[in-house]
Image 1 (cartoon, rainbow, N blue to C red):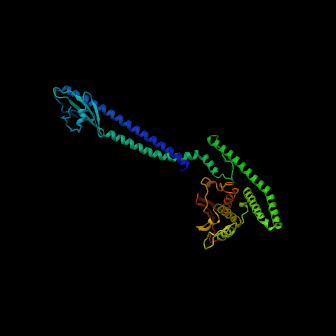
Image 2: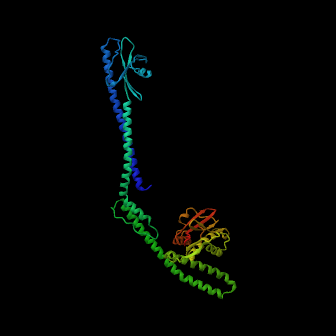
Image 3: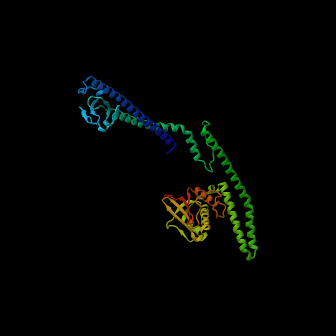
Length: 431
């Protein structure tokens, strides 16, 4: 859920809680007020009955009583037996027995009653019960609750719409800043544009812009450093290779093994210098020379370089558009890493079509990659604890894949192995 809808939903929720609380309070106040008013009517009726008792002969019970407010009455002995109950009121005898010297009220779902002791000499003490219907109190309380719910539902809809509009207007600067921040990357470090007030958002944007400026400066310094180091190393490394080749021509057969090792080290240094230059200048992206390639031939070539027996490719061609040198470099980096991790006999190369995409897969059965390292495995200079490289090979793999319009992912389990999958677009039939 977006921030705008969360703000709108929060406002609606607060409104619902407020409306429900208000409705409950109003319903309780209405019910309490009406019940208090009804109790007053019952007390007035009880006084009228007492006056009638006082004006009659001792021990006589009035038979024609007209009470206030349309209420009804009944007279019981204090043990619960009926003395006069013209309308057959169903009063719990136990409630009557509870009346002693003072009046008390009794409430059921539909009735409210006043129970009051009356002296009726020389008979036993009696209890006057004056009853009124409580249905209208319940009905009115229910109507208040229903009205509250209806109003609440309407207000919730209005709050959602109004909250969304207000959030849209109020959060527009934040949304703009968030979209600009999403576009930030190593190659796009522009300051965030913001023209609003210097409030909390303004302070945040200023802080982010200072951070972006520092990152931009750091990346520029890194590129300059890499380029300068690569240039400084290229000349002596090239000279070393030349000296070694010349020494091999003049050396005895016994020295060839040592000179071959020196040549291999010099070539590794040359490749490292080339990698540094590519990363510093972005040459992988700039120097693509695309050709129509068959993925099967590409994998077979790499497998031949490393003497890999396990190769899995389909019978039909897998044609795609790519730079053969760069893609060979990509597969060479992945394959050499896999061989260092597991040995050549535990490495498999695979090419397969998945809908309109080509998947180039390099799998090894080595020790795996630590989980904390996986999210950063394609960053520059990131390498495992046992890696002997400079941490540039996988960064170049990611750069070549991106330049070809594809993506690369890694899956690894400690103790079981690692799988790198490079996904590239296949040529469509009409092409």
